[in-house]
Length: 191
Image 1 (cartoon, rainbow, N blue to C red):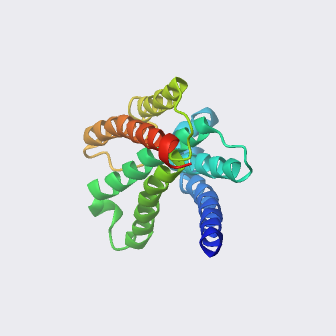
Image 2 (tube, helix red, strand yellow):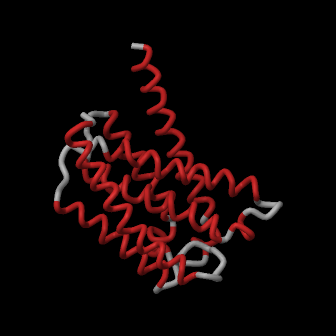
């Protein structure tokens, strides 16, 4: 019973932390959002959108109204944008970890790493993988197109943008495959 109570607290903490991260993430992008049309906003705010998906998916699980598709979309996007942010921060470490911004971006690095980590147990709640989950990959790839062909990627240094774009594309496939495999494991083991 004690372990169940602790687990429930952890789940509610994750729910609240991701909801707060969503709000902060949207704030973080406020300058970029102000400079772009409203219809582009969904492809600009990648990380906060991922944490919003997680928050909604987890809330639905707690209410007994689980959506495998939403859990899968949240898992794949959490993996992609969590790892993408960690990569970009390290790739441009001189810029992001300068003395005046080191603390902020250390926190952002840790929270985005945890986004990728929390995606796996969420994927394990999926009871059955469906072919229409491929729509998630299509969304991730569409987002890549918007970021690097239309210039809607987050404000980052442009040095090595080709490398960042290539890694982003690889992460789309990697995150989809990882979520797919975890969902397959979950349908057998995590119930």
